[in-house]
Image: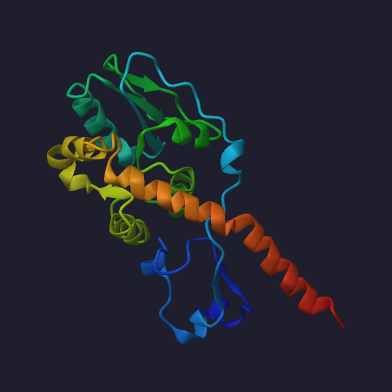
Length: 234
């Protein structure tokens, strides 16, 4: 709040309300709101610049599990390994530095990668945390997700709640992994007679189109140029 009081502009790299993912993490103060602008998602690439990785052959679905390297996420890794056997036609790609042993044949381990976007773009859906940057990347690419917020991370819990409200994600808590992870994977793969993809895919693709229309990088550049012009015009 102290920093915000000195700011002329507060730029939020997220969708305009009411589709803002980080909405519950924003200050309700009018002193902050009057300085706030939403630029749309700000990602380090254009969608057409991302070349998807090749999907493994012989599988109906390709799921990326992005975990990073924190040891406290191992329960999620182990839960994925346990449910993989129930989905023999799904290939699970692990992006993590955590040690993995005794992998089922439909599980792969890439370790940590410098750029996860090519994996996200190739995936049918992603299992990951509920960090804001990852959420913006996934929505921009039109890839829905199963989000498992890190324990006691209020920001991630708020993001996850919004992602569910927006219809682009299913949320599973750590204490629900055994009971709900397999069912959530099934939900992500449940289409209809008219659409092979789930309602989560359809909603995420709509928001991806909105992201392209907003063009967060151009919007941010325009705001900063206009601000600099105001400062230097006389």
